[in-house]
Image 1 (cartoon, helix red, strand yellow):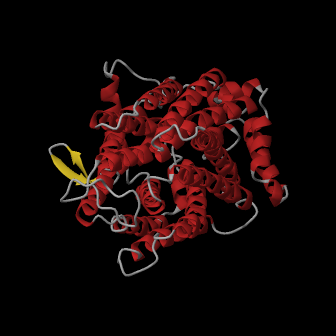
Image 2 (image 1 turned 180 degrees about the vertical axis):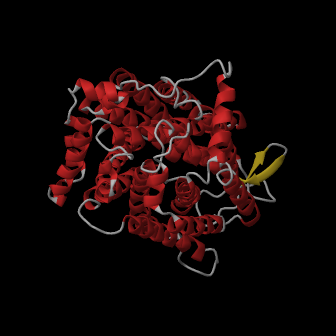
Image 3 (image 1 turned 30 degrees about the horizontal axis):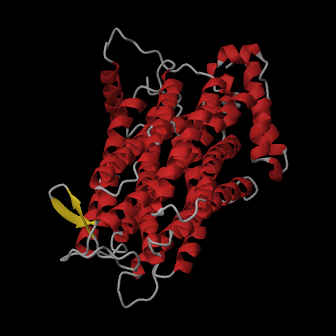
Amino acid sequence: MNTIERDSAEKNINGDEREDDGKQGLEATERDIHNNTNDPEQVNWNPKSVFNSRKALWAFLVLCYSTGPTSSMVSNYATAAILSAANVLGHQAGSNKPCPRRGTNINCMIKFGGTEIDYNSYTLYLRAISRATEGVVSILTAGLADYAYYRKTMMMVSIFLFGTLALPFAGLTGQTYTHLTALSVLYCFLTTLGGVYTVIEGSYIPIFMRSTGWYPDSRAAGAQGERAAWNRGVSISVLALVAGNIGGLTALIIGIILVYGRGSYVRVGYFNYLLAITIGGCITIIFAILGQYLLPSVPGKDLDRTKSRFPLLVAFRNWLKLLRSATRYSEAFKFCIGWVLWNTGYSNHLQLVGALFLQVTGFSRSSGVYSVWSFTSVIFACIGSLSFMFLYPRLRFPVKSYAYAFLVVNIICVLWGCIGISYHVTIGYKHQVEFWIEQVLFMSTSSALRAYNRAIYSSMIPENSEAQFFGLEIVLDLATGWINPLVMGIIQDRTHNLRFPMIPNLLLMLVGLGFYCSVNISKGIEQSKRSMSR
């Protein structure tokens, strides 16, 4: 870095520190993105400086928005539609009577291969399958995304496929096992693709951080520089999450309109879910086209085809190299493990609470209530992440204290469900009001913790290995992401009580909290100065 560039970087950092704390969040990010965008020397010196512009930021946010509708539909409506269809097709254990449509503990069996299982276990097994395939595919994509111009290409292909696979849902309204199987297959494909674009989307955050004046090997990356860089990282991370959530809100508003506006000629409530998923896929495709046009391409590492003529072998070789470097980047690995354990417990808890909400409110009449509940969950997620972005630069708490606070609230919410395991206990997600309180606390802190994770983790990643390190979350998730839903499915199949499977989620979060406590973030930033290629 020459003297002018170094001074410019230090000036940006020091300027941020001199400003009033009330301007260090989103305003700092927007100001830095405007700085030096017309300096040809900087563009030549750092190819990633093409992201030092408002156009690049808006393009990235448009793409984040584009995935929101389908992602929200898959996590809320697809699972609800599968559960509702399974409830219609199933029968009570030991008889041919139809399954109850409402209750705190519904005993309902459904065919699965050559046997019968609890209908809630059906969705948990689907989740185990989809998480396993998500990990395998992510190994291939994240191992190559850091090369040449593959990053943008892979992300765009995954987003377009993500939207396209949502289109057939509206036609799968038959109450047959054939249509239930089709819904299940599409759900698994969509979950797998969701992991691919999530990895590559996250890898853009450290690129934005570096393009706006923060370089780990410069004098500006001292204690003050770290704080300023985290401010920017938090802002970019939060804006990306909020953009996706706004996309989800768009689709959920459409879902609410469908539920309350289509009238009584829709015989089964979950048909509205299927139509909303298809509309969400259309929105994803339209905005992905716009994002494809706006987002600049950034070159990654050179792919030496003389060493291997098969790119897939390069991906596997890179993962072996990354895993062997666990001691070299020990803090990033520990942080990632804690993140994975929390995320596994978090995502599985969401699925269990959603299924419980449908049971407690009743399948026959909960279509409208569930749509509103899904909508407000995204609202509270936005509030949580935006509040974190607003408060982080203004409150001088130790950076790790935020993670502790968010995790403790999450753990309490999961523990509350475990309390209700006993039939003699009258609390533990057995009343509708409990779900609304849980939603406010759990969704707001979870969204804030996700933004925190992506920003802090980005500061511990070596340059030109962004996608691979963000893919590490999915790869490590192979150890727990598919096993935990499988264990939960077995527990549910034996107990027919959706609160029992919350116990593994509670244990995962507690162990994850231990990993968060063990991370030395400053040491992790020092470790990130060493390139993977060295």
